[in-house]
Image 1: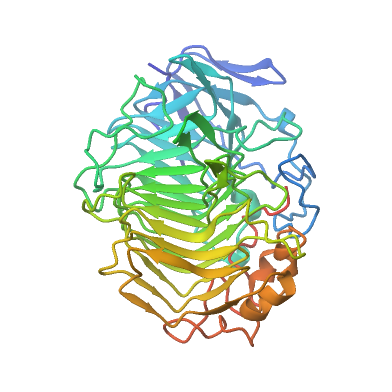
Image 2: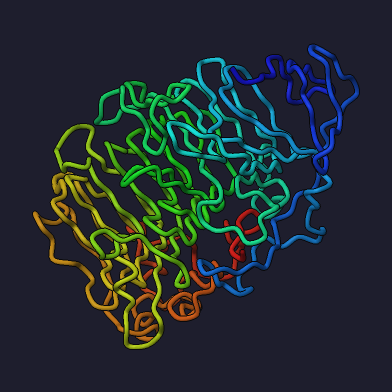
Length: 509
């Protein structure tokens, strides 16, 4: 069993260390060793100012230039070599606290398992990929699993300050080892949270992406609609993803049977090697999500997920790789299935989605890059639909319905653009409510924006750079007043006010 800290008061000036040979390292040399049950007094865990990593890197999977850096800070970039380094491994069944005065490495898959397992991550803490561990012949590293009945408390804005006054150094970051000079998708494993909320699968279902015979419970689902797995707020997950086998992957953020008592808010997943966000059943609600430059689906819903998500961004990377199936792209902004077999089991996958902005890209010429992206949104395999007040553009095919559960489904008040096809001819029917959607087709960036009329769309359609301010609808856009309430469509309001992405997201890698 892994080492644990059992008694913890996160606001106290002392802590009990219940760990034999607990060695912190600086530059690979012992920093300090605490004996078992040694009480350390007058130790203040002072938050070291953390800033976003200004690496200015490039690789074959990311060539974004310097546009749209929303991680600006007046402080110098943190020197990770100056921080003590701590490796975490194995299974934790008690409480553990992670603080910003230490850089934490996840060796293999780190599990928090059981009713007494609680992971507290203080604002500003960075958690990165550690050493690989082999499980059933496969080596994994940098994976965090919060099992059902366990809890995570990772709140990058615990003081609940306004977005305008938020301190960027408070963001919690999960990502690649900072020693990697040019990280790529897959250099970090991913974050997995499991709960007891309903799914349309057996409660003995094992979450995907984890090797067989894991050392902790990785099943999910149950009957507790309001199940509480804790808090994940003001956090970034970068360079995640792991392919265990075909259709068996770790995503940026994987949620299995997570209940509505859980808080998910202001979370960015960037450069995932699979889906950015995947919801396997559950009832958890979420808001202010950003999926940046993932290679597969940005938002993937399965197994009866029925929560509500409002304000979300999906942006594809023109310079990056994308997943294919049978030699054809299957990278979508949204993909939603009831289950793999398209069986009408209950609960039905039907998330309530509003104020999404889903943008692909174009070369800017006559071509549409249709070989690289599939659909803006793809509802299929008996999934229900509830998508309103959103913007979809920059894809060859904007919207596709394929054998959906039409009864009880809604697709309305959306602003849509496609390079060739707004709505791929539906197989098996369209949503029961399918109205008040405005849009058109255009083969190049300038034509495309005649339908969306965003502030500076060529930054997305042509140049491949990322600047969230470019996503604001102009006053003349149908998205400016196109919602079901007469307000705006998409993730951002028109005008010049503060963006909810400011200070905690990172768009320049």
